[in-house]
Image (cartoon, rainbow over all chains, first blue to last red; front, side, top):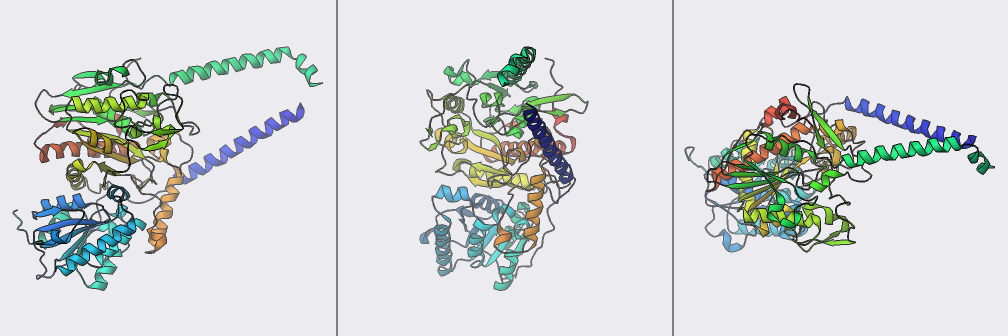
Length: 215
Length: 401
């Protein structure tokens, strides 16, 4: 009987001790602080001067490599006053009469799932579309508006494929914090426009397409 | 020998038995109290309260029936249905719904709000999670409102047993427990499980009332990739894109992504409501640490303040590896949703509710500005005001019992 009571008391003491240590750790950790939140202003944007001769022409064909953000980029184009159309599965004939191929960069697991393709197949498809545009002499503009969530293992492969083929890049600053796009743009000597917000992306697109400000 | 000792302590046995009975009685009372729904104060904008069973009569009198708050302007316009509380452990959802019912006024078109869409799920918690059954939010005058912390699933007391596998109404084979997960049961079955009937009733409401836009409000773990997003059916992608751009332009630093509803992930609102009704369907997610697998003990403070030391450490670790530059390690993300409050490294409920309400308002505005069917809703608490003043500032005084 005594040994049973002793066992109970030991168990209770141990439980109390573990709870106490856990609570102490909790208190200690909660005093720590970390950075950035959504109430802060976006980072300062870096506007790269685009050569005068580099004006992208409308109509634009908007597509994606990675199945992400195509509709958003299409809406941004429309708000910039650019005559544009969104086609996810671009065929060679879709490029006829097109002034610019605007490619939304970044991966979406849900988008890939919706299309019923895996990442490798999407990379291959993307490379084919970019090659078709190159052969058809259609300028390519890579656009990355997804910020940090559209970077990482899945997205980077798609971003790289597009950035390596593009004639210019528009990238939200949050998606280029590690200089991923800057490195490619500098190495390939292509213009990179880094924007802080979608509003700036609209402005940048309007500038690139030479759309009058009053539109 | 042992037997002899027990016989010699009949009084002790009686006392222990009595204590056990008292403990059982207290536990029973506490258990049954979980069936008491949190109070909600109907705001001036609510023109009628209907029951979901009006669109599917077999639900009447069942634990699946729930209130539908109608905010009818009386002016011709768009009709919008917003469902909150599909998963009652995603607390920012039903708190946001409560704020809508208590504050919003419709001036054009009609808004319908269901705060406790899976009403049964509010009556219990998830086994082995040790969730608190309720949490409180303080108002500026010091009075407090309480809210239920429920389960992701319909109460097994109301729907039991689970099948071994659940072939949901959209034909996808899922784990048996998902027969009680409302957001795997769309578009519902009129004679199916209770949860499937709730989904059916929601779809019937949308069809019979000619709803133009359907919005479903959720939360997910901060480490889940599909978080801080809108997920839209293909017919709602343009509308959601417009809303998203407006959101980011209107609120400095606000980041939200848009994902297409997968064709092969079946039973969820953004897919099935879009496919089986004429409404455009959008689902929104915020990050909730009390749902995550990295979390520590789920306390009321964790639920309301979104404070969890494990998530703070995970975030710091992520910052450190990203600071090391590019490379495989740097490209791996631990958290897809960074803490909303940089000062404390936390995910406070007020930030999550503010995100949802801002998203809803932006979608309503996009519907008005970019389609020929408009809706005008006033009184939705402002994103910045919610963050600075807190949720309590927008809650009505607690009703008397």
